[in-house]
Image (cartoon, rainbow, N blue to C red; front, side, top):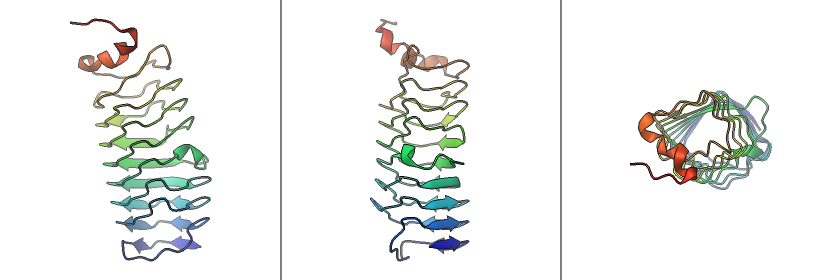
Length: 186
C-alpha cells in the first residue's frame, strides 16, 4: 500500500501495514500497539499522540519523521532501516526502547521520557538531549562526542566506557559522571 499526503486519526481502519509506504502523511491518536510494521516506510510524516509501543520494526524506514506526544515503549529502533534514518521526538515516552549500535546523529530528542533506554554502542555524536529524563538509560561504548546533556536529567555515564570529548554537562550534575568511581563528594 502506497499512501501520500493524507491525514489519519483514531477512526481510521488499518489492515496489514507490513511493507506499506506513507509519504507526507499525518497520524493523530492512532493506536498501533504491537502492530507489524516490518518493511514499512514513512517519509516526511508526522505522528501526534499515537501509540506505537512494541511495534515490529525490522526494516522499518523513518525519514524526516516527527513524533509528538507519542508512546513508543519497548520499540527496537536498531532493527529499523538505517538508510536515511532521521526523526524528531518531542514529548514522547520511549521507556525501555533500544537504539543499540544505531547512528543517531540525525535524531532530535526534546522533553522525552527515555528511562531504561539502551544506547549501547550507538553513535550519539552531537545529539542534544533537551529536557530528556535518562534515568536508567544504558550508555556503554557509546560515542557521545559533543553530545549536549545540559538540560537532561538522571543520566549516569561512565567516562571509562564512553567517548565523551567535547560533550556538554551542567556542573551541578557532574555526579552522573563520577558515580562509577564510587567517590564520596560533599
